[in-house]
Amino acid sequence: MFQDDSIPYLGDKTGVQTLVLFVDPYCGYCNQSLEDMEKFAAEKKGLKIFVRHIGILGQNSEHAVRALLVAEKKGRYEAFLKELKKATHPLNQSQLVGLAKKIGLDADAFSRALVSDTIDELYQKIYEISVRPGN
Image (cartoon, rainbow, N blue to C red):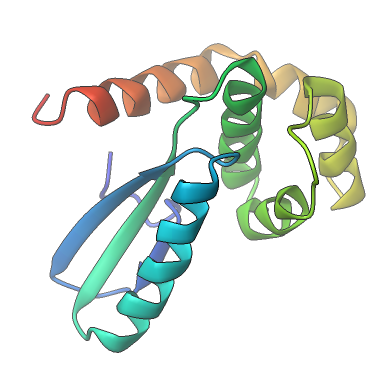
């Protein structure tokens, strides 16, 4: 799961030391730790920090994580995350589709992908790893 170059990461692309950071997109503490890790990764040579989002703060968090996974699959993760961070409150599923459209993704395809088996399986796998490391 963490050998895929499309997974968002911070730091050194060829880093041999790795760290996995699990964050909820709507958690203030998580977002602060992500900012701290961005600074740390910039200072530490040879470190690659994989970023994985998990939905721990309710249904809107889960929807946001699924949307980030779809955006990641479509090569638009950074653009989507940038727009998501601008939100002043948790977004519902239709608002997330609106963000996808805003960054140039097809809204209908994005909506279908949100509920696809592929995204569901990936979401579950990430969640399992986050709550049961070592599996």
